[in-house]
Image (cartoon, rainbow over all chains, first blue to last red; front, side, top):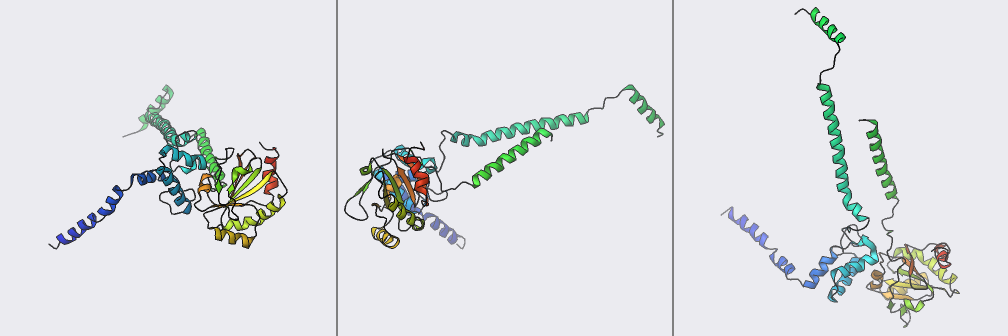
Length: 156
Length: 179
């Protein structure tokens, strides 16, 4: 029983956020749409915060603009485009995959490719060098005779 | 490591350092506006003073300087003397008019601002929920746009207008020297 009561308390604490989550599930579908759009838009005056998360006045007013537009039945793409036309692609938290941005998106893969190629070339060179080092040194007859002479002088 | 690799590595490091050096000079607040050379979004809003609503399209045929400001904005205080001077200087011009958009503000504070720092005399539109400001892609205050007689935005200036701005930036555009 002494072990049981802390466990019970823990279970109770885990169940507690239930009502809050239920509220989120039962939210107005319009508000869900507003949240969906606002989470992808950058709060223009903050550092890396979305319009939905920010407490700045501009973000709050932007949220209201989105809310009005969603209520008026505008499509998600139309609303995103509205902000894009006014603030440029800076307004998107995640850069679009169009135009010069394709370079941005492909850069890590290009970098990985170049790195891989460099590593492959380097490894090939290392292996070549090891092979060269382990191969017998080519000798000529004069050299061989000298080695033999030296060996003959050694008394074991 | 052979000589070629050394040169390649040096080149890459130099390129990265160069990019950093260029990036350091960038002002993160100076974001190019996609609205330049696009038709300005018209607005009609209650004026700060008087009953006549302020409408941008009423000034077709004139160059319009649209200045976004607010009584809460510190840089606007710094900018204000030049706006006063510019309004006085261009009063006789028929081809140039100034409009203010007082956004995210309450009219009483804005009027108090003008009473305290001087009233340049041109009309100000009230935009308490910054609907016009968002429609014009405004980030903060002060920001100014120069609209040509056809209603096209030709220039955006972020931050306070500086003394000589009209002669250096606006006049060349107005005289067609800059396309």
